[in-house]
Length: 304
Image (cartoon, rainbow, N blue to C red; front, side):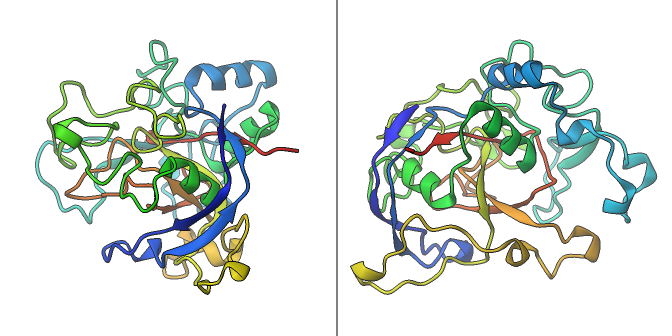
């Protein structure tokens, strides 16, 4: 783990296309330790072998929790990205499939495995899986403010974790989508996770705070950041997110109204033409019972 010095910083952004990132506001965060990379398959395997833990994706869904689900989908499994072979409407989300048998051991479903990917981030974990790992390890999930402070690496107001250019001198500094999402990738390998530490550290010595996998935080999602007066006496210290009730999307169909936590960092699926959320200020609401092959986690330790 590396030490993240505490202090005040400007949280959020004012990008018009992402209103949930505003308003920019000042917060104070105490110093803490953060893992230099996301939890890996190797580390999660040690947890499972020590405890016998069974992840959410490995358990049969309860019909009462998903009253609108097709019976054939009420089997253990998870969501997997499947690259279309042609341009599609980006509003359709048609690249996601529920794959029976997909889980952390089989990230893309039966036939896939973590052998050879021991140092890739563990994926297909829901929020309760991340909390279970944290408790076993004697660690914690970060708050949204802690995560964003760490991702900024000591840079004030920078767009990315390394500065204001996405690819300085044309060099990618994170595992994000190259090409036109979701049907055309210019990478030599299929889109997916990469070993942690494949790209340079940020200013605090942290790997992959941008791209590779989204990371769970422990804050409930709310639609906007709160305003706070521009007075040092009123700057929130160690702020937390909204309430569980506030995190539920009341516009969603009744069966989809699940509590949501904040994800941070973007993933290998983020692309300029679709989802430019590979930035410290970016945030996304994810239902606490949802796992995919591009969501992982990172641990912190607060001084006692």
